[in-house]
Image 1 (tube, one colour):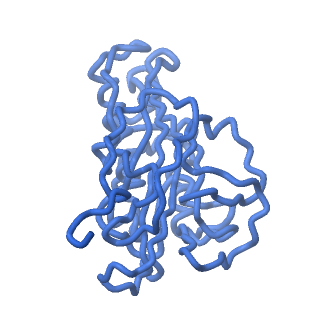
Image 2 (tube, helix red, strand yellow; image 1 turned 180 degrees about the vertical axis):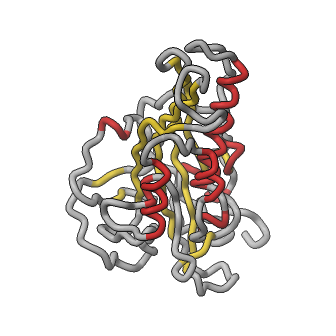
Image 3 (cartoon, rainbow, N blue to C red; image 1 turned 135 degrees about the vertical axis):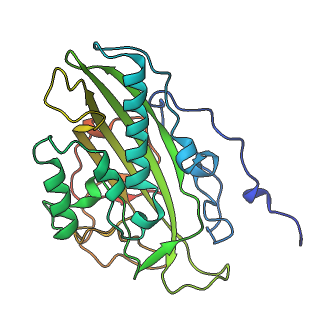
Length: 277
């Protein structure tokens, strides 16, 4: 009825915080086409948290010979890194992730040079999307100010004098074409990015490290609804009603909202097809 929100657009109850991988993928989340007014229509992410507030930190405790304050710092800095690489509005629209790079230890061999190389001259082997979410501002712009986020963070002792922080988060980005107007008829595409990241904070009295800086131990990621085999440093969403222009998809169908398995245990077989966005 005029003047009343459709039931499909009613806000669902927010999910409780995730503390471990779920046992299965989320169920169907209704139907309908996303719009500027309702960019998450038909997506399980409608019940997820918004932006940085959805990255909730566990209670810090002393581990590995480091005090609770050191662990709390490692957790905060890991959250800051996730925000700077996946939620910073300027970075999402193609800017350099300078805040993220400032969090990394310059004494960790190779990490910062590799990231800088991937940002300045990206290719298949040097892809900044492995760590940073960026879109080409000449091609797309965010459909609103909200990015939906779901995941969890844990920590454990590493070697003596080290704490290892593991983060596993999925980010959902609604986008419209760069030239789209403000009307609600502009088609909306959603690109989904999942990241797993293990960071170390170490005691500089026992290890060669810069106080308060993070070292990346390992990372993995997958970007869904993104053109295949395009390695120009940006994600390129495919919009409803259009076909991909990159290489044809040859991999298996994948549900980007399925967080029931670790990315580290998955072996992608080519560029796959998403079952939903």
